[in-house]
Length: 374
Image (cartoon, rainbow, N blue to C red):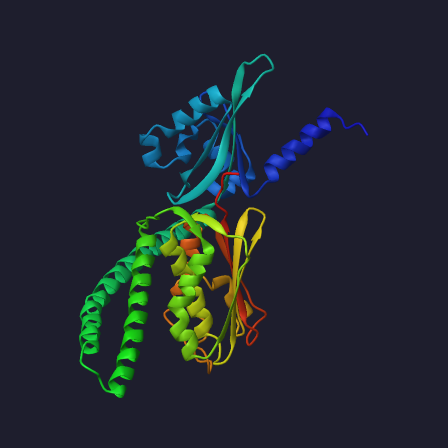
């Protein structure tokens, strides 16, 4: 179907004039207003008759006029065809609004400049939303920084009494043939001091990671050795809660490039987490293997499980499964956050799976395999 040129031009005029949410205007080569639509009348508060022949400078705020912004827009459009802008503009009553728009140079086919077309829209709502988001981001940064300072201060303050406590336990152990009840008490104190030491170390590491101060001592590490040390470190808690711990590692070595102490810290935290949230007499498994060029270790348990709504946040700092459950022994909720951070800086990833409360959980750590010479 052929549409006549006159009909198309009539439609374009109607479109330009009836676009109530957009200000559409035509300027001459010097930036004087030749015509504008009803949308511009509504947005700026001037009738077409009031602005015809006047410089479009009257739409700008005094600060923008002083900076020479109107002239810059015209110059940019002349050389670059179009000048996009996002700025405050002024209404006839002096009030301001945030506008997004474009100024386009209009030329003959031979290149002669005939004038300019300007289209803009009031987006004060968008500006307010962006400012709110920026303020929220800044507030979160400040809060996060205060959190890091608090954790750093707290961990140092808690660390100070640890050495005297450990020394006192050793001195008591040196007593000649301590009574059985004294020996039992010493074992309890030793376990609690060691738990407190690990907690303080985790707190310090969380603050170091937040400040980007964690340094890895990279070497080729056997995950068999890492798991063995982690199992030995968590054995007292596992035995105390009478868990059945099964370690299923492949015969072939699993070698990764990493920091042995930090990787041990990862699996100590995962095993401690499993032990805390698994009822007495429950089961814990560590299963190792490979997938492609990654070493994969799963830490699974038959514990209280994780609610589905908590799964996306389980690695967030201070997040923990509801500790009011009969068998749960929740901590501060820093262990899993530290696990994720340490695995990530090793170039790996960690995921969690649980079918819900009472159905256990499984954490999977994936680490790049170390390249070996063939």
